[in-house]
Image (tube, rainbow, N blue to C red; front, side):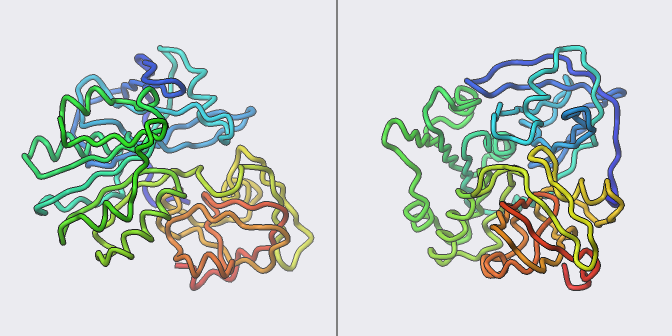
Length: 326
């Protein structure tokens, strides 16, 4: 039960391959007015996976345009099926999407900005770079990729930022050193980050280690990235004989709600904590993919964010004892 989620019909206008395994989609909502949306906005897209309706969230690329809304999707063979569905679409396909929404707060009054993108994490960062450059802000973008051939929007960013774009390509031996970068930043610098979960964990540790206030590190997340491979696992409900299988292409939240075990939710991105559920027992390992819980809370395995986190093996949960979940 999401509090506010407005769905609108739309048409896929065109697609464009940006790099190996990365495709851009231009989507035109019905009765589209080209209104501006906040930096870091995303839309949810209704997809079909193995005949079942599912929802996937994608960051909007760049600032608003009268041509429609742009997203970029990385083809991930180990994903839960969303990217395969999106890549199967042809121009003219009809879609249902939500209106743009942003959970990324940007303070436009700062003196210095540092943008960091890891791989496909460039999608929300591009719009931030455009907005800051248009304002004449002091901004530098650090873009971490395997190689320059894998870097989507590289030419656009080079034209926009010039030498304020720093590419960290692993195949060139230029890996991003977050400890060194954060140690070099002036106090009060606002960092906007988007990248995979392991990179985000490293960024948070490096940020704290450099003595910067944690609220000055702001980020977007990938809802499918974790430390363990995405695989099927099982969930037992405490005090009952109910045991559910969570397929690799579906979330625990979706399976629980589909089977009548109502779990409240809002963001479905592991950020708000509303869907946090008590964990009673773990026979295996939990892969915490949220950014809501602290490292200590994740280590305790007492709760799990049902929207994005997964497991290996079987976990026993209690969906009723949730008064202190948020």
